[in-house]
Amino acid sequence: MAKNAVRLNAEIFAAASAVGKKESNGPLGELFDLRDETDRFGQKTWEGAESEMQRMAFNTALAKAECHDADVGALFAGDLLNQCVGSAYGLLSFDIPYFGLYGACSTCAEGLLLASIMVSNAVFDICGAVTSSHYCSAERQYRTPLEYGAQRTPTAQWTVTGSGAFLVRDANRRTGMRASGAVIKRGMPGRAMEKGVNDAGNMGAAMAPAAQDTLVRFFQETGEAPENYDLIVTGDLGFEGGSILEDLMRAEGYPMGERYTDCGKLIYDRERQDVHGGGSGCGCSAVVLASYLLPRLERGELRRILFMSTGAMMSPDSIKQGQNIPAVAHLLEIERG
Image (cartoon, rainbow, N blue to C red; front, side):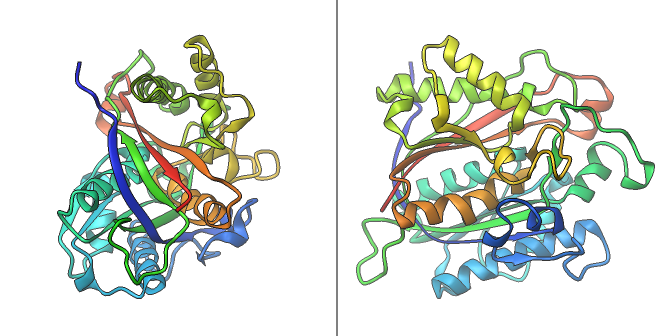
């Protein structure tokens, strides 16, 4: 059987985030680099606002790293909109080769995994990974426009209005450069699968089996175990999917206990902000990683973590046709540099 765990040595040497009002008012609000109380970022449409978030987040990451367009070999970017137009329009002003990705909410880890493979194998010196989501644009595309006033089910998650941007380089080739606090040491690509869930209002249940599959394969191939990590963080399962994952992992002999959490639980105050099942969307895991997890690694509060973004690979048409929802989960092992 093919081994899927990938050995890497990619340093995340700059990261930035941009978020909207609800995220600014959440528990992590003061940690984000850029915040807009209107959710519009100076644009006339929600889709335009999402593109602008990507532009601003990536530009901020470049400024932090003191890099220019010419320094970056490739950009890996994606979002939830049809044909990933949020990324295509948002990153137009950067003179960098562009790879468009669609991994749904798994796009953050997918982009970082591909970027890390490239720099770890000396294909490029530096790569960027960018992703975003916007509550209003996602609701209009996948469910109903906000003006419709549809009722949200208890298991429904709130799509994060946010964008995260990252720059990675080979950790062995940073002579003369300030070391950051995070190095991606291994990755586990996810497998697309579906387990009979077709409820677009319960994406956590659809994604949890994919998260279990990726985690179990990683532990089996590497000989690692949950207790070897300070934190195991999924991206977008929220409260419902996170609880299911804990049960599934316990049944496989890998209880995670208090070391497990989910970005969709961290970004909002569930009761005060009325988010039902928690946060989701491409921007959810991206902004939490950029503004909360990476700084904790740099400060030495965390030494070794597993970070995994999960994605529900549905489309507006597949939902209307009542098809089951495929999901995928990509995993990164990140250590303090």
